[in-house]
Length: 107
Image (cartoon, rainbow, N blue to C red; front, side, top):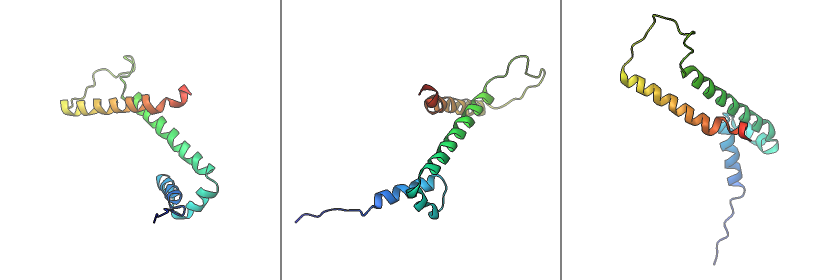
């Protein structure tokens, strides 16, 4: 005797729930996602664009300013561990932007 497995659309509903959860939507939107996913895809695209912009701005803020723009006579001392942590953060941002931020520019 063989068993025929059928999920009655459960995987599709789980996908819709997960998509709604990622967009921080409540359960009322699940039927709307199924009926008309375009606005939700546009919302997701907008969030991705804003994240790319935030990563780019963070990288620009971490770069050394031009020599003429830097105020003279001001300095701040930080511990070496803190400096290494900040450098690691900048490296992660640059790596993320190189992988994900410039995908649209190449396409």
